[in-house]
Length: 302
View 1 (cartoon, rainbow, N blue to C red):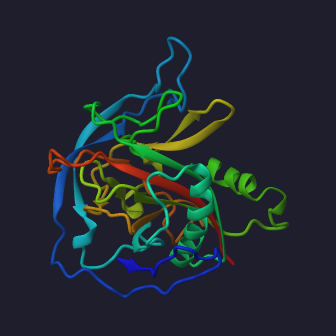
View 2 (cartoon, one colour):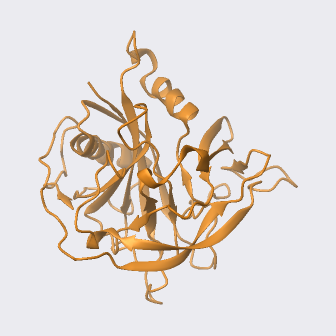
């Protein structure tokens, strides 16, 4: 894990050194769990991010719960790389607290994130543009795609997906930069998701990430996400036996998982990291329900 010093009042342009630490365990431990893959069909899947009209389902796709092995990345001999596998875990203390509202999150957390992702990616400018708090409802026995009714907090998302597609990733550059979009050739940029716990170690529903190198473009299926005032686009994922899944056991408040969701470079780097929540089979029965925050950040390179 890459360590960061306390960033409680870090300015957005602060950068931190990388760590050369490596995990020394000879082999990863694994858990075997069911992950929710899309069953491909001729119709493009549609998901609603708000309560749909009467008689319309929350999601139109059909899914298959497939048993897969997920390795504990803490037990790897070498750490993953954001540019190779597509994800990294960093030691990144935060001023954020579970009871902070959206305004406090933007004021306190966004500058921390911008400093963090510049250190992780090596970019020269970073823009945090949204965040989402998720709370697992212990009264719901199964996990789904985590959308909430009006006034409710989103739940963990168990559908394997990426946050952006080729098209929506390109569109996001203009939405974030607006009139500040550079003239001339489009610079290289990427979009990362930064995920962390807001309530102690995550034991019940961790986040699994898939090694970007093990995913082929043909397994990424465009899906529409409908919001009250706009439509978005994500990839859902079709099953392939070669997919390599990882998670970090017991992620705590001081840790941040940074993983790639889009990269405009077409070769030589990770571009899309599928991910999903899963029910850990060894979670203690009295484990506190997961509360987590995810934030997306656009990074410009030289």
